[in-house]
Amino acid sequence: MADLQALLSQLIQGQIDLQNHIAALAAAQPQPAPPACKKVVADPGSFDGSPAKFHEWWSKLKVWIEITMDGANDVTVAAAVYSRLTGPKAGRWAQVHLDHCMETHAAACPRSSSPSASVAHSGRPRGRDRGVLSPWK
Image 1 (cartoon, rainbow, N blue to C red):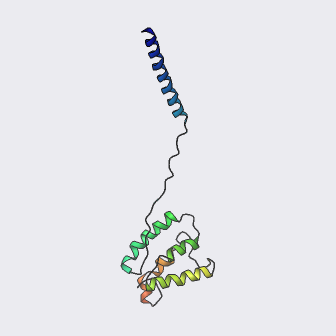
Image 2: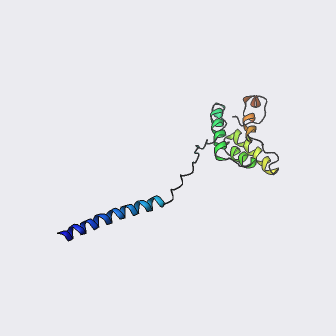
Image 3: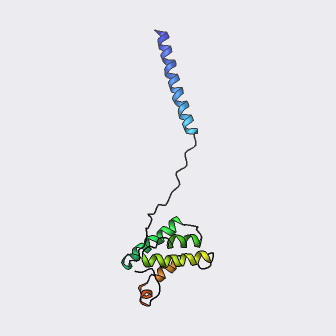
């Protein structure tokens, strides 16, 4: 009976030692790096030239550009903006401006913090009233 008691004590002590060893190994493991925070913004879609939808689309597009195209050059941003203009007038207007931008190797592309400012400026109804080609229907 004394042998069983000694054997049981050894097993209990072995289990305690094993648990302590596992805890020490777990503590020594490097902590995984937290996942990188990714900013997710829905694609604003395309603009078909409808004046009623322009301001909502334009707001979404500016946020999308700011988040997804951080550090992109002016030509890339201009191409992203122009490629989202569709419809008979907006699409034609965008194609003319994109072609001109590409032909001049970025010299004619909009610049600075809002490379797509020409779309907002040209999208005003007064341009249509004056007969100026604009992305409006």
